[in-house]
Image (cartoon, rainbow, N blue to C red):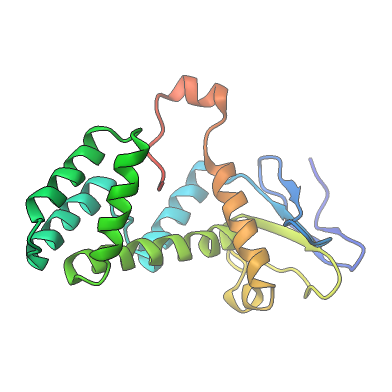
Length: 198
C-alpha cells in the first residue's frame, strides 16, 4: 500500500488513483502534470460531466444530413450536383478528391442555420472535452509558477484549472482522453470501442 499524500519539491500533494498515473509534459514546457487513467466509475462521471457541459458530439451521419438540408435550403442552381458530391464523399470516405469537394460545400454552408448549429455543437464538445478530462484525471503537477495542487470531491476545482496555462490544460486533457481508451490487449478482449470524434 502507498503511504499518505506524497509531497513534491514545491511542495504539493499527489493523490494516486488505483491505476498507475503517468507524468506528462506539454510540448515546449518544463511543467509536468501527473495524469491518471480513469477507472470505470471515473470514466462514467467524466462522460456525464462532459454531456452536461459540452453537449453531445454530432455524428458524421448527422453532419452530412444537415449539410444536405443546408444545400436544399440555400437552393443554388447546382444543388443536385452538390448533393451528388455529398453522397459520393459518404460512399467513398478514402477518396481524397471527393473529401476536398465536400470541404468546399461545408465551408459554403457554414452559416446556414441547420448546419451551423451542428458545427457549433461540435466545437463546444471538442472545446469542453479536454477541460473536463483534465479536471477528472489530474493527480498532481510540478513546475515554476504553478499553484499548489488540490482536488475537491475527486476533481480539480475550476478555479485551480483557470490558474493554469490554457494550452497546458488542453494538452493534459487530450492526453487524459487518450489514456481513457483501452489498450491493444484490452481492446481485443472487449470488442470494438465506441467511435471517437474525428
